[in-house]
View 1 (spheres, rainbow, N blue to C red):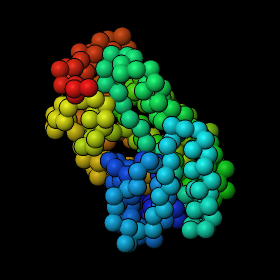
View 2 (view 1 turned 90 degrees about the vertical axis):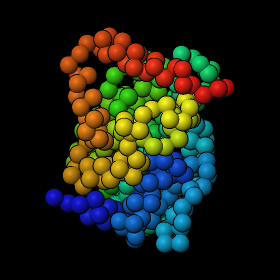
View 3 (view 1 turned 180 degrees about the horizontal axis):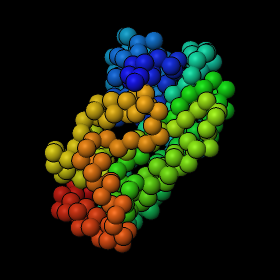
View 4 (view 1 turned 180 degrees about the vertical axis):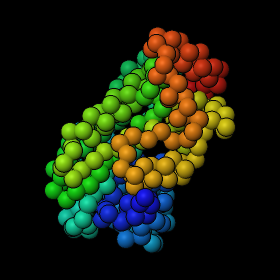
Length: 272
């Protein structure tokens, strides 16, 4: 069985979104340690706070919610691939995304649409623009979905729907790409020790630590799944149990139960 290190050695370059923090940052740091010869290109608003002395990393400042900036980012990525990693397979990691907690459409339609733009449109646009290169050179696409993709998520209604789209799109794309030398992997983490919940509008500590995983653990699960040739992976045994159990219940019942569970966090919402 190939190891994550062996799987990464099949690639010459990693293109990632949202590598400045959280799971994205861990992807860069851990992949760089496991395979020091890899070249990385990160697209995000902020420069990753990473020691680059032993890392080949180009940062492209890019607001992925803006389609024009995505196109500019694609041009920079193509330059990076042509000049800094001119040969070899490409690993594209669609990681950027955020959630909004509250009763829809709070805190406002503009923020909801910005989330949809980042979580869905940017993923589809970037992948579509780079797919011809991946087909020409060979490669893989990891897209970060969520355990929220497996059921309706009241109080995270639009967020859960974006992740359901990402999961189903990634699985369908994997089937379409059979025989092309490119495959996809949908990564479905549960609560993770990043700034996701604060960004969503919840106070720090709202989600019990026993339910969460570290971003490093999530990345190792993803790399192991990549090495095994999987098209989907749920990170953590508790999350696996949860996502398996909802498959046996009617969706209206799941929505009600999820609403009761997620509604518990309403009292822990951060002050505006």
